Length: 415
Image (cartoon, rainbow, N blue to C red; front, side, top):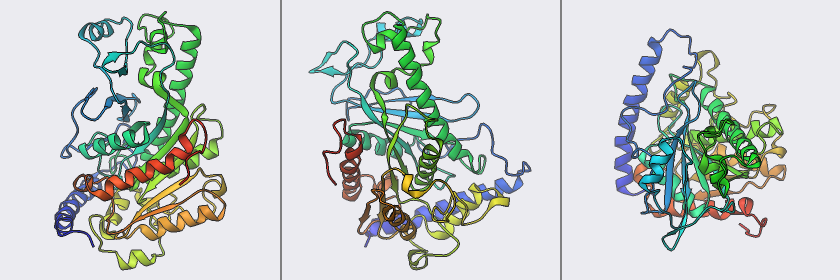
């Protein structure tokens, strides 16, 4: 069973959550927009704690971060997490040059404290696109908890993590969050193509990838190329990872990537990780009946979240966003990427997540389930639980499985 501290915190958490959800429900009922998504929307609530402003080159954990607003028509943003065993902060003259539009020197990993000069052969890292939890109505890609979680994943997987700040409900209801996930994948594909073209043209006149494409004075428009992605990201090894409702977003993006064929090239989704997905359905499962009043996100609270997320005219627990097991929606399951599912013992959503994994295995998709004993919903990503042994073990287990699909030399690691 969970500890006494977890139980007490869960009681307090649910009281606060109920108040917040009811407040959002009341404010949304006052709106007369017909539940149309706000084109700009919000990605973070004002009362939620956030990590410090970026870019950040903290040497404490060996992960550099940067925030980017990628869509001028909405609040959609991302936070990039770039791991390195050692790196140096750009010097003041370099920063001043970048502000004046001169060649941007970019992120430079170093070896034994000595800055490495860019020669076009910097290490390319796989990319993990991460979607945070919060019932579609709360949470943020820049929250302190999500920042900690993404840093941990970046280190254990040795991968670049891109945390997506999708729009929240009720200001931006379905399909806003799902559309934002697809926009990020599309943006990544465009970034890769821009960097490839700029590198071929030899813009900027520098020595390596960074020197060639990040000159603010050229006429190609290379200022729109994100240097960390161009220098360090291998988008042919892309993994989608989502926690709670973020797992719903990740699964939807994976479905669309399968359906679209080559639309997002050169981005290739090689696997996805669904951590305690926020699935539900009109016919309750055994765990939904037995654990309906479980810890933190119980079923009653989750139903309020679905009412805030789905438009009133479309509210249905078998909606495509809510129930992946309804047949005839999306691509055939046999075309889905390898899928790792993480479930918690005391989570009322566990049975439907396990059932979805079983359906994938029936059509020969690699779809294991990691079931953690004495754990609750969001045990590996909730602020209070991030430093527990189960949370650390979960991240390491995810890394073991994911490395089968992001290794350059193939599947030499076995799960």
